[in-house]
Length: 144
Image (cartoon, rainbow, N blue to C red; front, side, top):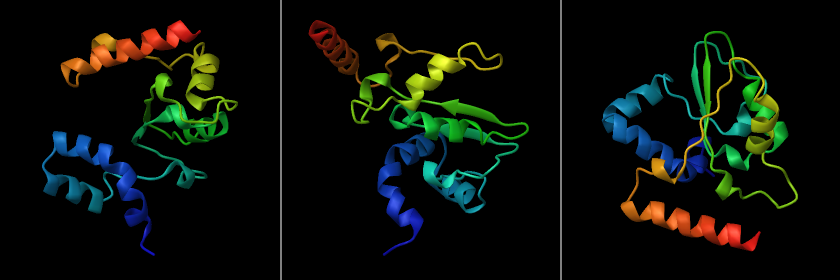
């Protein structure tokens, strides 16, 4: 029971948090109602062309290469695409390659595509988060 919004809303809390950090809640609701901001699960993107749009794919580390290609090829005229993800937080089965890893590798030589990689120095959360990330990275490197 429930419509699509009710089913996916619990997974979208981080996105709503970011929107509410930038805009008052009533403005966010207004933009959502006007479809100026549209939140769509990746599975519902197939077949669409997004013209005159600013498109964000978040948590892209958990896409497959097929999903990533499908998403990237939705870009229409006068659109920009931002893909975000953290390669240290891939939740896919270990034998499955991340679409983010795959696309980073094959799209590097494509003119007009830019990759920006952040480090622990870019952390904007609590001061301890940087130290937590460094501790996990150290442990991961120790196991290799």
